[in-house]
Image (cartoon, rainbow, N blue to C red; front, side, top):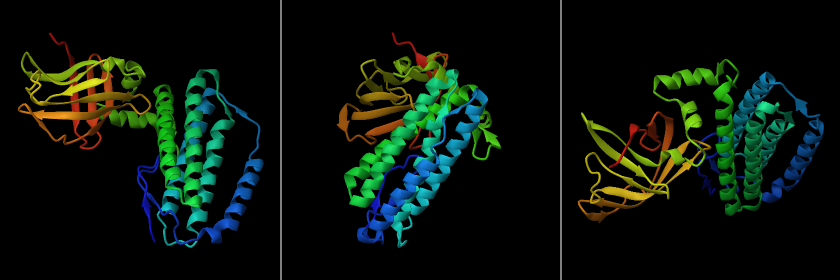
Length: 317
């Protein structure tokens, strides 16, 4: 049985799909048709009026719906790796439809005026997730690898918007997580113990990340600054080891971008020099989680090595 490994899935992490599984398309044709009808009937049953809510009710609903999305994606992750199941395709397709009934709950909410911007981000997240699920479903039913890849990208983009909306909501409100015994404020308290202040990133970094432009590093020794990163407004960047700046004979050179939706700093390393010689680039790409930002300081965590860097802004001569 041939399987296809899919890249990071939006909410549950990495899992795999089998393009065909142990169930032939002929066997599931009628079952899938039945599944579509069940989904339509479910939508009709759920064709309830829009729900107008207060701010407090909105926060409670969002916490509940996000938990449901997570739970249903966890079920999908389980089905997607159960390659021996006789009803592999049917199980996965039906579960995708279940998830879409949850995403529709977000659309039923009439957000209070002070939550409209946040709610629009949630709706954008649901649109990407739904589109991604439809493409994954197409990939299963038509054995279409392109649809799979496009679907994964859509769901990943949906996760970015979902995370951003949650971050903006939790800036001002304690959003219930899971069964509600833990809130976003509880998680913030734990983060602060590690020097993480994600609200400071949302408050002090604009969507284009323009505040990141400049030189960043640390005090090498008393009164002497070490420059580690130089970010330019045109998107270029330079990275240096301890004591190497401004000698371009030792360093990495490439481009940077900032993703405001998940607060990450992404580097593309095009070239790397050691003692003046062009060498193989060890890490062509690097992604840094921006964990705090403000007062000319930044905390970054390398998402591959999990190393943490605390830099201050340095004025270059």
